[in-house]
Image (cartoon, rainbow, N blue to C red):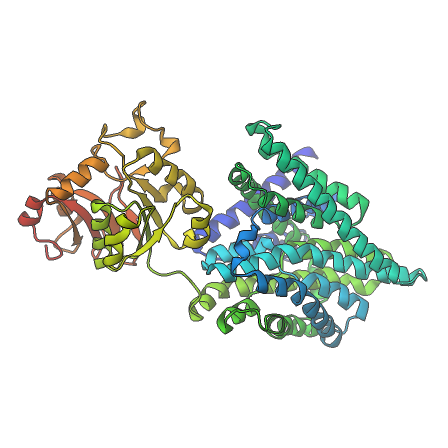
Amino acid sequence: MSSDLTLTIAVIAGSGALAQWLAWRLRWPSIVLMMGAGLILGPIWAFLAGTPLLDPSIAFGDYLRPMIAMAVAVILFEGGITLNFRELRDASVPVRRIVFLGFPIGWGLTTLALHALAGLALDLSAMIAALLTTTGPTVVLPLLRQAKLPGRVSSVLKWEGIVNDPIGALAAVFVFEAARQSALGHAWHAAAGYLVLGALIGAGLGFLFGFGLSQAFRRGWAPEPMKAPLVLASVLVCFASADALASETGLVAVTVFGLVVANSRLASIEEMRRFKEGIAAILVASVFVVLAAALAPAELGQLGWPHYAFIFTFMLLVRPVTVFLSMIGSGLSLKETGFIALIGPRGVVAAAAAGHLAASLVAAGREDAALLAPLVFLTIFITVFGCGFAVAPLARLLGLSQTGPDSLLLVGANPWSLGLADALKAQDIPVTIADTSWRRLRAARLAGHDVYFGEILSETADWKLQVSRFSALLAATPNDAYNALVCVDYAPELGRSRVFQLSGFDGPPDQDTDPRAIAYTARGRTLIHRGRGYDSLNRDWWSGWRFRATKLSETYTLDDCLADADAGSDLVLARRPNGTFAMLGPGKTPPEAPGTLIIRFAPPETDEAKPVDQP
């Protein structure tokens, strides 16, 4: 029996991870593939073979729902620690409106649509509407990374998904309790009092946990290796404690917990975020696989055309009307409001709460509640599928997407880096130059380059630069340790294979194995080979070396170009025919396809011996 359970867990984790990897390779929405994996292993396999390959309800029994609840708690906390109040500088009014006006308006309109189109009882319609009115971090955050949206739109969607998620669950519980109290002959006001009390308990407990943990870390009461595990344990304890005091308040507690920690200015907040991101990624994948696999074909077969009519009315009418009404006078442009109105995928909290409430209502004699779980799940699937494939094209159509040609972030303004920026600009490769000195940036500004004045490691840079729009980073200051620090700081977001640095000094050819150099785990990838650092590159610049652009062709191949490079040139960057580029560090061979453009740093004699661009 234990071996079967082990295999089930392995199948869930493996299929979820595979779905995320395929989504990355195919550039598809990851949530769609996760749900697809669950449907294939569950209801689709059962339809074809008679029994599902994966049946979580049998494998985990009564432990399934507590496990899902704990996973959702960690996911919501991970979303909460990304909510920094500094993000609200430009988006505070839209966020307040989408939270305090958008939710009640959407709840009311969705209730009416369910009652009128799907023919559900009014109380059941209100319960489902409360769950469906909110988006969720499990689906919104991956879409934001995919679309590369500007800060204000991204902040509104992120805050809506994380803050409204527990509110929707609480509202659904309120309707559930009101219906139960009415069935018992009690006044529904008791349910309203329960809702308010539960929200206060959850928020208060989350604040206490967040404040206590922040103080403990700030005063040094926890060793560094224990901080991340201690945070995870605290999240689970906070969630379970709040839920024990008042049902469904654990989600409020962990969201407030994360919000307090995110705004406590802890030095170790980034390490905690990265730790939680890794855990949340596998939990999100596992939860969606489990929820999709748990559906039975008979449940999905209960849904008819009225339910599909509701779903599309909900997506194309209710959501847009809700957003436009709540955003009147918010300061958002019409394009920004329209984008938010059409992007509203529903998340895992709705699916998890729907299954729990449906089972309780059916057990209480409400057979019509059996539709709750399949209807909510189908709505989640269609909204995620539609929004997942529409988010990037819609952002480009409205002019909101920051996608475009691959862009380079160049840290450090000096003659060598400015020469590289000029060469890239001449080939239509976008580049941003960052430096802490207006004087050093003067030449870049006069040349028409995009510049960032300020400390690249500051929180302001995180907010203003919007690093997701860059494809690579090159740290080119004279300080080797500073270059390494910049690369280590930006590696988690850009990827370690995309952060490069110049050495601040001329050293051995392979500094990765030099015991006297900064360890390779604490630095970026070296860009220039042969041990050449900042000093020698800038000295060569003043000696007449320049950046040359050479395009490969059928007659001038990569071998010809490498032969020229061996004569003294340094290969720096290669742009592929499709417009993407790759930095050429030591040991990295440029693409061979004709049409590839190679940027090299060449001495004067190389330029005289071989014409460039017309080899």
